Figure 1: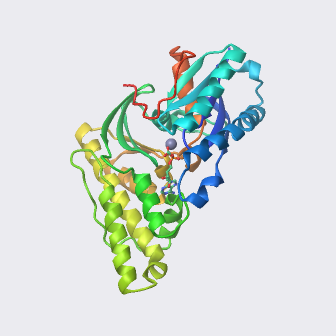
Figure 2 (figure 1 turned 90 degrees about the vertical axis):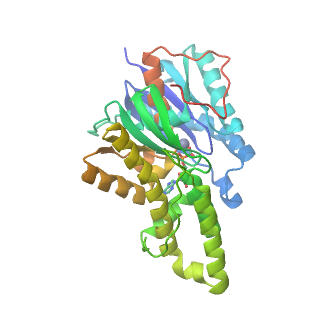
Length: 341
Ligand code: KG4
Ligand code: ZN
């Protein structure tokens, strides 16, 4: 009998539902929330309200697109954390109600570990090889920056992480300083394509060992821009592409330094990228180049699997289902959920 998983993602500002049948993706519906744009960041209360409005239509569309009826679903997986509490509550409550009504098990999923497991999603007609264990994953999102040793689908260890801001936060905050819309990462990426990455030299901060630190870069960028604009009004407008390209290069260099170090330290040459910032073309190119130079086997997810989506929740739930690692009905969301080792 087929194992059919319905995955639900609602940790931040995307409501998403996906269906995976025996590890094969059947649908992945994502509904973003434009309401936050005018505030320059996610407003938690508005996010949770939008999730409430979106969740039923999103699930309905995911089931219809997959050609699967509610009765055929074996289990439901949902994001338990980390994320915004009000947002997580919507997905968790939906999953509980659905599991009770259909009398099926639930699987609680760690959003970050799920980002990494996108590398195991199979899609109809797509011939894709999966990383073999153990591999290293650079997980870069809006809230997290981590170097993860992936020992198995369900066993992961954090080897290094940011001690302050995440890489995505650095992109978004610097974008805001330049007056770009939220989230700024994709905008910086777009402008960077037209710019010179060596035009300006920004600091490449390190936190020691395999850890990262991005708050200094953000502050030095802010001061640099403020001073430049003061002595040369219109500086930002005239140099936007070069500023974006140089900033993107600095963030990429910082991320790559520890990735190279961890591969050297461990001898592991299977290297994966995951999380929203993995959509960044500068970072993707840098990993591809490093792979050629250091003989890595690199795994870079397609852009749709980098940002938040429920396909990653469903694939993680599928592996937990195989282990019968079910969640009880009294499971509560956890805004700061840690990795399960
Ligand atoms: O993984 P994600 O969708 O949400 C979290 O779990 O945080 O990541 C969102 C982050 C945002 O900071 C966004 O600016 C960044 O990913 N991002 C990018 C790009 N696309 C998304 N950053 C740089 N370049 C991109 N192309
Ligand atoms: Zn995410």
